[in-house]
Picture 1 (cartoon, rainbow, N blue to C red):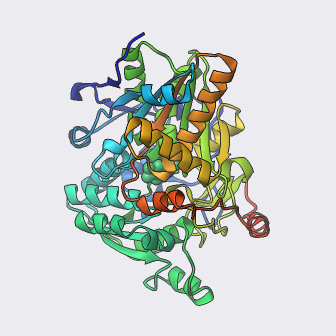
Picture 2: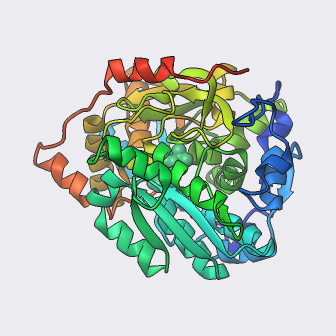
Picture 3: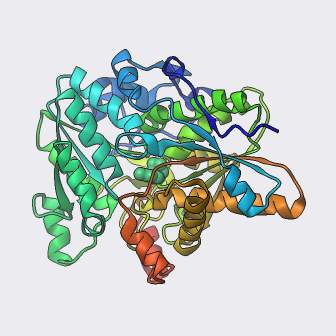
Length: 453
Ligand SMILES: *Cc1c(COP(=O)(O)O)cnc(C)c1O
């Protein structure tokens, strides 16, 4: 057995195209609907929100979409990202499984998010846009877009969910270091923010509200476009560099994953690692298990309804058919802020409906305990979001130990947790509690779903 630990590719092996799973799906993903007419969205309906190339990618059925050279050149700053064999974690668990992880925390902002921030900023620059507005939860997406905007000379305005803005002050400092403007959401700068604050002055915010504020800002300014960090098809597409590299690296390792795991907030890092493998399977390759892991306190895939819903709280974005907790639902303030979203990528939801992906929900204390064990074995301190993937990987490895099976497990380590030390401190001083959502509020949000499609 090999003792190799890092499987590295040189820059020439950065993928030259993104992989579009839409080309290989047995049945198409239901289309986005117009927020007012509920008719299927036309490209022209999205023109005031996104650059033309992004709209084309959102609706594309082409299997391979070229990555512009300017984007690949920036990817060289951290791509190809390493694939690692978790030898020491395997030993600590005494498992018969082999565990690999793809490490996306090696990017400049510390997560997989720049994989999409860079091309989004590039296409907007190409289209003559001057400014981008966006939302961020934990600040990972905001920091990534701030960096991307700086590289291509675009102004970036970020609405950060209030609870994260307060919990993670250093992430805001990072966004500002990269040159972006960051305000807490709900804010008094938008009509939507003011209306939330007038009802609930101490509202903790949510990604749904922050998206509404960013979209309101975009609709009011013709030289500004919107950028979303997850959920939409084009974002998932950009993230497929992860899985395409992992395919090459697993081959270098002489292993083939039986189980592929990612945490799921909006679904983009999970899709990034899983879709290139699922695509192989759709085209007649071997079948594997794919596990999407979400927080028990924000259980979109495991307890949400598969229905048309708005992407934001105010109901100004297009409707998507997805697993949703209801766009009026405010998830509790868990530490994995990047997983605190009421909806899920329509493509990931569709695959769950087709039975191709297994969703799983995990509480935050077992997640931090998994993350701490991982840090003690492998040295990398994972983001609270990534801990969800680690918890599931460990659970599968322990199952292998009981059964004596030798499964190969691959998970995506979506980011590092260096800005999340307050959460780790709470965990280590027993101040962290497992949160559950308010069942009554969830039922109310679900009964308020728009009836469409
Ligand atoms: C944003 C984020 C996530 C969740 O978003 P997805 O779109 O589901 O990938 C997970 N991990 C990290 C580190 C993040 O920053």
